View (tube, rainbow, N blue to C red):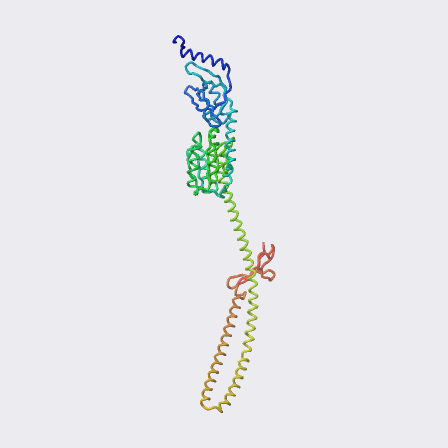
Length: 455
């Protein structure tokens, strides 16, 4: 039995010959990178797998490697073409040879890689994420939120040490309008495999204090575009679509648009651009408020001038009317004063007749009756005297008051109190709008008058 056994080396040599016979030339293989390692010599070692599309279970696995001199060319070529690093979890189309070494066993030596295949796979994944969000009816949900007119309370999700975060804060605080913004940082990892979960957790922390903020800013800034694949993650995008505050994205890339950009309420290229967006929105409102203020001042000034002009016209109209009323009342009082003696005389004469009648009756009346009637006659006499005196005093006081008011409203008296009257051709000027360039006007003072020409 021992004579029929072969050594392990002989077995491996036979396997090596069989492999070389079965795969005499290089071939293209589709696979997913499960693990990638670079050693200090510059060689790259990979574990390639294939997964079942339905269950996502690994159905095939093979060890692969890229020698250092090949890896130094393939790595930058792939990353420049695809915009992302050659890393775990991506699908690749690689060309290589199947080799079996006596010591290391079976391996696949990669000599070329097709970046177009990986780009198509990445784009397909991105389109699948977008389609899933659209089918769930949440793709435009955050865009439907109303952006505050002047958002000043801002929750910021970014890395604390990121240059983009510093640029964003500096731009806000040094704005030319002096607008004050309150901003609070919620730190998160902004690149790599842990970034989607870290950013989602930051959104959850912001949600706890959602009532304190107007919107959320997701900024990254700087760095290579190959670090931005985390922003195509489905669960991160789903968090953004479901967030109750508007999300402004400023991830900091110029070429590609991530899924996070698409689902955010508003997207800008850089953190600085996000700050400018917020400042410009607030400045437009501030400028509108200033414009309203200027319009209000102008309207108020015009109204005051109109009312002042109307008041001046009414004042000049009231003085002649007051004089006219005073003249009429004075004439009426004079007429009443002239008629008063006649009225008094007639009144007295009528009572004299009554007294004479009472005298004739007294001659026939007993002494008691005479006494009573005499007392009554005395009361009548006193009442007549009192009413006549009171009527005369009241009339005199009324005449004096009317005369005093007349003197106060006399233009001569007005001039003595420091006021002036301006005339043109003997007519009082009540409104500056009545004057024209070249008109000669005359101004009356209490102690004289001057003439002047309108320039």
